[in-house]
Image (cartoon, rainbow, N blue to C red; front, side, top):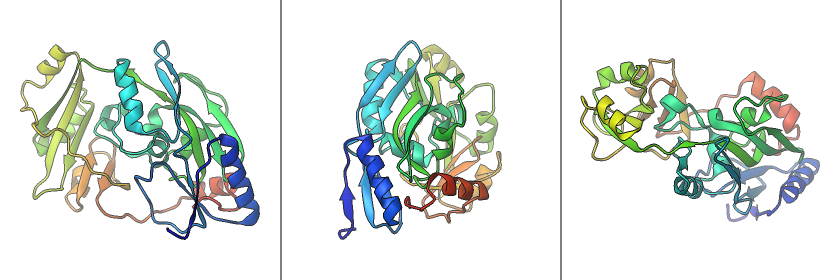
Length: 295
């Protein structure tokens, strides 16, 4: 890493120029946000987005926030908390990384993955093209949703420069309770509508938790038959995802160490998982990054 040049652009145009030149010269670029999730890859240069940061716009009326990709997710969440809002997700790196990785979180049973709250984005392709697409409401639809395609691609198809995210009102109460593993999936898909039900196999036996959010009295009522967790939700900083059929998350979790997000079909593992590229990914790669600049 010490012999690799680190590029730190300040503008979208500078990012575009890096990719345009790299495409012509067939150089490989690895993109970083805050360097909190450094993936293994061979590259000639590293493009850091840490200077592409800042909150651009926040709307209470339409409940969205627009922010540059290099902004810390924790910084963004703190800003929204101060306004009485929040992003229903947990993450430890940059905002761009949140959507590039598309990892699940303890809120994913109800709110889905990061791409499900992504309304639009400005991106740069491997050719250096700057593309702005999407809108500021969930009903907006115009053309090919390229900002959705990039989510989960690990920055190999294109790079987020800024994103527009759906936000929610910060609830009066958020409560985490312990759940019996044998009842966990049933709870996840029940009318009690937990924000998330997750189980972990990080200790000797599988343990499960549920998180509920809403008005304090309502949360207390729906959780009255459960004991509150004193340590909160388990958390694992990992980028390795395993997929399962809905309802089979615990079966797979019994064979690996990690966190299962019930009702989503996803598991966050504590070990590396081989990456399998689909045919559709390869087609998109040829269209957005034909010189394979992004690695």
